[in-house]
Length: 97
Image 1 (cartoon, rainbow, N blue to C red):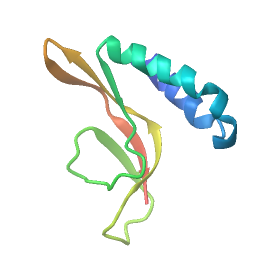
Image 2 (image 1 turned 180 degrees about the horizontal axis):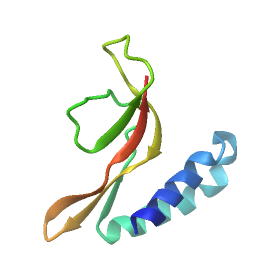
Image 3 (image 1 turned 135 degrees about the horizontal axis):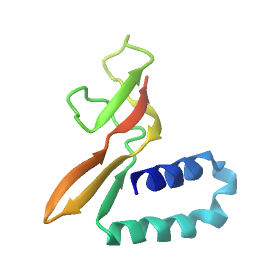
């Protein structure tokens, strides 16, 4: 299932913002159905980068600043609710600048 979620995420990110409006509702419904199945998909784009975050694998392009931010997300973080516990299924793969 994580591969399907990653593919949906990639398709969503490849659609240009000006062309996204007709697909917005479809993606919302897909993500809603995934949430109903217990999956939590996190897109950490534009968040501050914290090297202690175990849910992220980062490629750092610019280490010259202290305010590093996640500029691009190649794969989202995926969790699954199992028996009341949130289990990490996939680490996010990100670009940090």
